[in-house]
Length: 128
Image 1 (cartoon, rainbow, N blue to C red):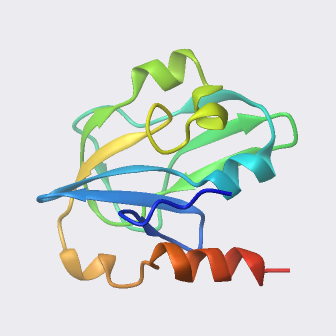
Image 2 (image 1 turned 180 degrees about the vertical axis):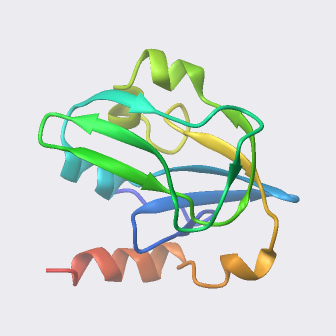
């Protein structure tokens, strides 16, 4: 499995790429593998306010429907319409083409709980 070093990771299998005062959000390679083939994505609208740990959408896969939880509070700046139209991008390219949202960061302190790539790799390896 691939966990790029420049990203930060949550225990909910969300990655974030911090870009100034906003961050791009997606699901990890581990998450997409656990879900199996992804067939649908629901995301909030651009301009929507999201609160840390609240559900902001869902991913439909062969095995289940999984909620997507906001890793921090902010305003949705951009959504990946290409991934909505072609959900398999999350399986094929979870870190680039399969990103989900770009959200402003209201409180940088909410990012303190994120793990490095190495810590996340250890977390998923020992999660069972």
